[in-house]
Structures are given as C-alpha cells and as structure tokens.
Length: 401
Picture (cartoon, rainbow, N blue to C red):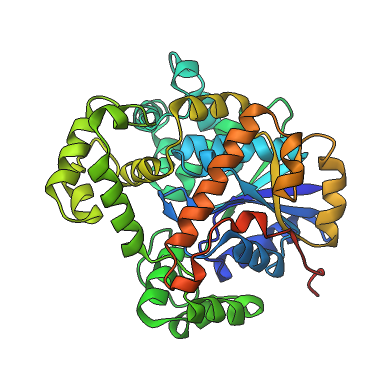
C-alpha cells in the first residue's frame, strides 16, 4: 500500500494544513495512505500544544489524513534536527514510501543537495541533533553553496533541510515531496486567504473562534468552538507560572543535569529566575544572540518535565521505539496491518506496555508526563484532569466523502 508521511503539529489544524493534505492526496493518488506523525501534548517551540492531541488528530482525519501517530515528546521537544530525526525515523519504521512537507521555496533536489553537503562537515557524526549544530552548518552551507544555502534563512525550508538530512540517514530510502506552503510561518496577522497557527492561537485567545472561522475547515469548526467554550485549551500564563515556580526550586547543579544546559548557562538561568517575577521576564534576561528563544523555551519545558540527557541521547541514537496511535480511518487501518510487523503499535497504555523496550518505556513515560502537565495548564478547572492517556483509545472515523 502506498503511503506518504507528513510530520506536523497542527497547533491548531487549519485550512493551510488541509490544503497541504489535499496536495499530497492529488500527487499520491486516491488509494494512498496519508500518515500524520504529530507532536502530542508539547510542541517543538517548547510549550504545551493549544488543544489536546486527540482532538487535533481527529481534525486531521476529517481534513483528509488517514492515520495519526504521536511523535514522542523526546523528539517533539528537540531542536529542528532532533525533531526531524524522530519524525523521519518513525515514518521509515512504519513503512512509509515518502515524506511530504510545506516549504516557502526550494525543490526536493535542492534540499537533498544541501543535506549531502552537510554530511561532509568535519566530525558531523559527533554533532548529532544538538541545539548548537544548526548555526555552524548554515554558515558552512552558505559558503559552499550560496544560492541553495540562502533557502535556510526561511523557517519551513530550514526544517525541510533537516528532513532531507534525516532521509539520507535511513536504511530504507524514502522519496521527498516538498510542496509550496500557503501563508508564512509565524505570521501574527490573519491573512486574506490563509492564516498561520501562531496568528490563530492569538486570535482564539483574544476573540474566541469568531475571527478564526474563515481559516478553520468546516468539518472541525464546531468542535474547535466547543473546546474554546469549555476552556479545554492551554493558558500560557498559567504554564509560565508553573515554569517560574519550578525554577525557584532548582539549583544550578540540578539544571546542569538536564538537556541543553551547557557552557555555564545554568548559572545565568538560575540567576534570571531568582531576579525576575515571571517566565517571560526571565527568558528576556537570559536571551542573547547565541541562544535562540525557541531553545530557551524548550529548556523551560525540560525543567518541568525532567527528561534526562541520557534519555535524549539514547533516543537520538536508537530512534522511536513505538507508534502511539491517536486516530484513523479505514484506509489508515489497512496501512497499520503492515506496520505492526515492523514496530510496536500502542493503542492502550496498560496492555501494550509489555511490548516496549526499556528505552521505549522511558520515552512513553515522558509522553504521559507531558499530557498531565498540558491538561493542568488548561483554561478551566474542570478540564485539568490527569492520566487522560489511560482513558483515550484511538478514534476511528469513516473516510470523508
């Protein structure tokens, strides 16, 4: 069965995402399985997703996808290279034949050529998906191939480059399908036809669903409105307070044991949280040209979720140990029949735990902690129940006509 993967966050799912899926469907054919590998409770920018993963997965199926698999949090909360490594490896282990993504500019061969060039970097094997590797690689590629290297100045193209690098590292080749994206990543204004997820989240916080209706697929609009009305969405201020209070309790020695706390940054970090009254103020005090804001936000998440450096290093080396199924349709179910022979598929936490390697159990434990933290950050008190992963089974939805 032909299958094409898309690595995504859908935070939230909007018409631009539906447009990408329709492009992939047109290119892959009506019988191909479109496999979404989606960040779960936390996203790559280092914060809880706006809505829970189960609703976002259902919206993706209603928007044209066939199956949604959770990207383990250890990869979802990594640098672009770690995020891509986890997603591409999971797609490969599921048996997907290709990987699609949206980009501002550039062709598949552009990104693969840049990836091959990056593979010639000295000691690249030692760098892995580190937070500091991207800057040196970009400088090298700009010097080696100025025209193609300039693609990396655009956020989606930079992620496509990381996907291309990860594709070249797979034992089984996957085709690469970049498509022109609609709208611009990180735009803070609602555009005439498409809007970024960033702009939609802000509009939902400010005005509810009303201003967002033109940018949300009709199949999920009512559901989004219900979630907003119920307060089942992340309150960023609440999350920020949790991070700030946690960091009043952590010492520099404790911070030093967490991922990404290197080069003495733990001392600057500790001082900033002791001297400032909010998460935002502390990040502003820590921020320099050397440390990207997204990296600092991921470090904030590490202080709350407490992943070990060993877990992250081993996960980058060994790859995802399971596929956590969130939602599917009939075509997705047919695809998974073959995938189950290659990788443990998790549908129920308690009964499937025995399928996992020790590393897989650690990866899953981090996913569960991330879900519990996210739900505790929801806007309304009655939406903050924990252990929701134990009460959700994969959601089956009939193929949309």
